[in-house]
Image (cartoon, rainbow, N blue to C red; front, side, top):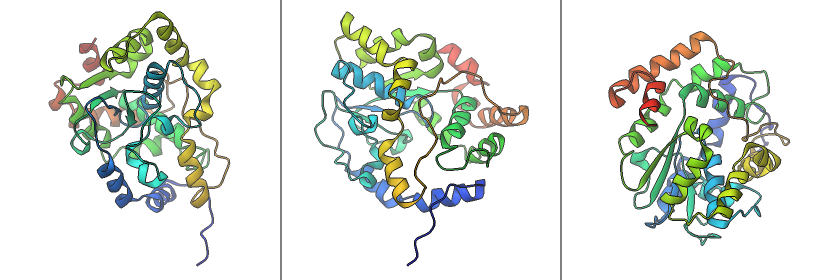
Length: 292
């Protein structure tokens, strides 16, 4: 059989086709079924592009006092849904306690019996961040416009389904519910909350190490360790050309994007249609104001 040429998408239709070729529903199911939660496990569960990698780094720094001897943060805080695809033993011993994991699963699909850190982020910023992340990895820069990407990729309301499940369990004793925008405003307070939730003793030295290791300059200096190296290597063996030009660690600005008024209004309407009745808040801004 002739091998298909490896190329990045140049249209949203081609991007969907790439995702379809790469998808492995049975492997994903095996990965989820393989994970055996322990009561002290910490599973980091935001929707995509909502602070997952940042939270992984905070957590791993706290439990190891600053370990950076890894090539991919998801090798030391593994991604549950990809363990089968990456041939990882999801239940293997980790470098330090408590064990930590990453997941983008909705609440209903999540294996129960662990502790969970969920982070929410403004849907506009999360959608635009996803566009910037995929550009240069899965599709050629400039080939798909931001507005087209966001309008088509958010039509299935996956963000809202994920948000609903975790929102309904935000006050559970085994759930720490964080707000990305509040993390940006108060990193020190966020570190204290995560350490307390994970039962990690936070002395002054560890606090200072974690503030440094969770800072943007530090993570940019080690950005190759936060860019899904294992998944990139796998995708470049079978699907995509090598040398992707995309970065996970970015400034993560709040409310700064290249989206049109029409696209932003579409996302605001999706919030009202899917989440206003669930949360009791007409906007994301009013919701997070209530969580301060």
